Amino acid sequence: MKKLLKIVLASVMVLAVSTTVASADVAKGQKLYLKKLKSSCNMNGAKMATQHSQDEWEAFKEEGTLADELKRMCPSAKDKALKEKYLPHYFDFFFEYANDSGNVPSC
Image (cartoon, rainbow, N blue to C red; front, side, top):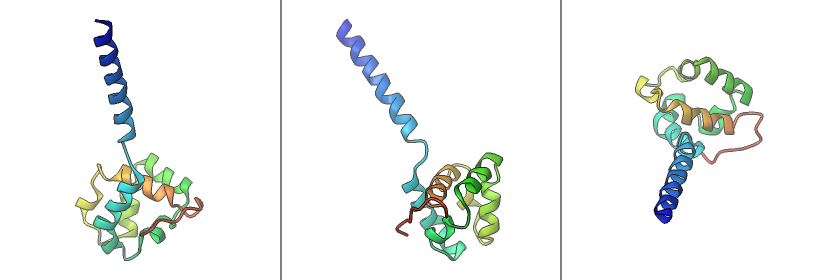
């Protein structure tokens, strides 16, 4: 019985850790940008991310205006490219490579 309980607890811990890690991802944001926004923004990911600082990107996210800012920067972007489920990934990508981060993406 103790062995079964240990296995169940270990499984619960692994599940809890894996769900928090999979919430948003810089690499996924980069892939989404390349697939959904790059053609309508007419700039590569590096240039797009450096349009704002990390604080500015964070402010857009906290205020809930990230989609509006992306639409302003990329007026020809389709609404389906700015779905709510994509925004956390876009944010992680833009935040990671913002103009004050010192990082440069490979796209």
